[in-house]
Length: 285
Image (cartoon, rainbow, N blue to C red; front, side, top):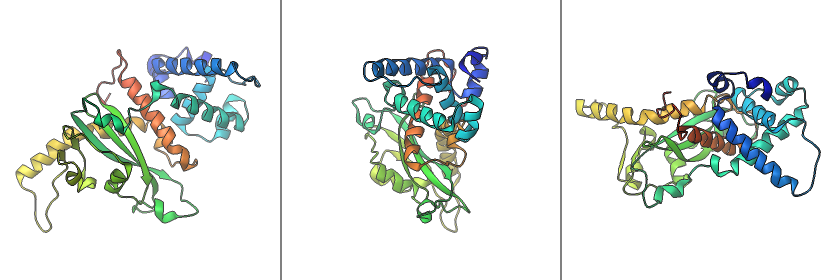
């Protein structure tokens, strides 16, 4: 569906088809137009076969459906290489914009740090590598994966920073390798995969493990349930990111670009959460 035809879609239909709101799409157009103007001041080039609006729609369609370049190229009646170049071009322009950039781990140590954060790791399946398969084997049957760590501010439901590792890497090992550290005033919530987090950050909560050959008390079970109710927000955020099939289907591309795409989609999520008329104040919407 080209830009002219997409104008006939309702707001809900546009969001369902491309994964973003119209306000987000309008902001992307503005960023691409600014980049195009700055490029004109330099050397000229061959005129693009797709308009700026269509270039953005192609990129969104690729993230949303994650079909091969060849299939998308046939829909848009251009070459496969044109779709490949277009997607990379749009990604490179958007990631440089401050509108679609995460705050970063340094913001966790600002003067007013977030009061409550949640940290979690989600797995994205990859095709079995030809080399170094053990590095990506997650321990689950026939599952090779990349791990993406998210740090979420539970006050405004924005993603603060991300980190990435191979499927073999333990969640807590990924946390230590990422260099993420919390302010002493910040309370951190995590799951059982972060055993030992309290040694690095005393102001953190993780579920109480059942003792070997024993059982949890009623108080311990109540504590775990209460913690799960607070942490569930980050699980909903993971679900919202994965409406883009590029993060939920087996990742076929070169892994070195995975972090850029995941960061960009996370920043788009943050942008839509901050929209004044947005109904996304709750991660369940």
